[in-house]
Length: 426
Image (tube, rainbow, N blue to C red; front, side, top):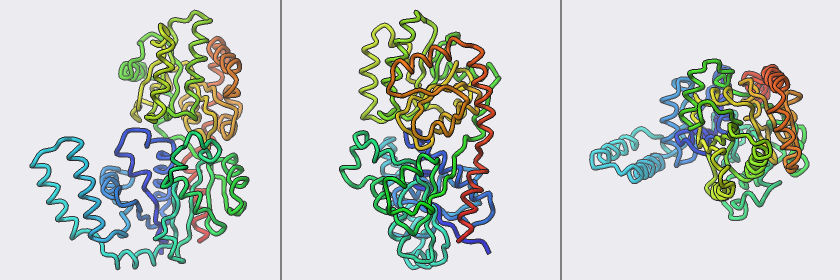
């Protein structure tokens, strides 16, 4: 008989919004979930907080990898579910300015929800039958902690908000999900870390965790990252994100936030093209952004005057366009100050795109000897790396080939197998 596994899908529920929420942690959570489902070892139920339940239902219905293979956990009362449904639809009506017909449909769905959702008694009975709770990001909820029959596992991605508190003012305000995670750390639960660097951070900073209770489980890049050789597809992606057709470009992909060190990168890129009198090289910044940071970046770019046209903000990049953009780039840069894993580095390598990245934290574990690393606070070191990767055709080609070979060491199958191995010990 299969064990019941309750999977916290809160971060996956955010997939309906194409913004900074679809970060590396989202993709890691999704791929771990599909790996657990495909292992066939567990009956998988999805947990989410109240406001995300309806989003989660929609995702499960639309996703062919999850449809019919997972179920939403019956842990909300009739009143809870109806309230969540109504709050979501009311917000959607307001956002999209929907009319009377849509509102009547919502009320009909609300009526159905009262009969389709579970009762509080069913919730308790269900939790008594669960063997494993797995959270890919957040703290285990208190309503799960009170059940001693449930073994708890949590994936730790990084200790960055502790190491760089100035970048995360939310930590000081209270109610931030990461603070709740830190408050929940203990000696009994089992943890996974995405790199040896992350494990070392948590062991050093949080003695309440047993060292032997943290298992290093590297992440991977999805199959939709590949070396795209179709010039028409690459050209279509360039046009979509307003990259000049014949020009060369350097690609960057990350959430636009202070820790990613993009102002440093932009300044030194402009210095590089000015000193070398280059008029056909662009820096393309892809990814969602923090509203609090984007103004600083925009103001900095304005200071570049005539050179600001060489920096292109592509914004959120659709999944199907990532491989073409990586494949069409001269090389990829990742100047981040600190990473738990640094998935974009691996994604670029899997596409055969040469990589320049920071030498800090986990990134040496990912890139190995397949590209160039530099001190992310050293302007001269970064410009020197740009110079070599841009000028040396043989080195750039060799870096791309080495990256593809190294990327084969990582796979979501390996990731999920390591996790399943620990979960099966319950």
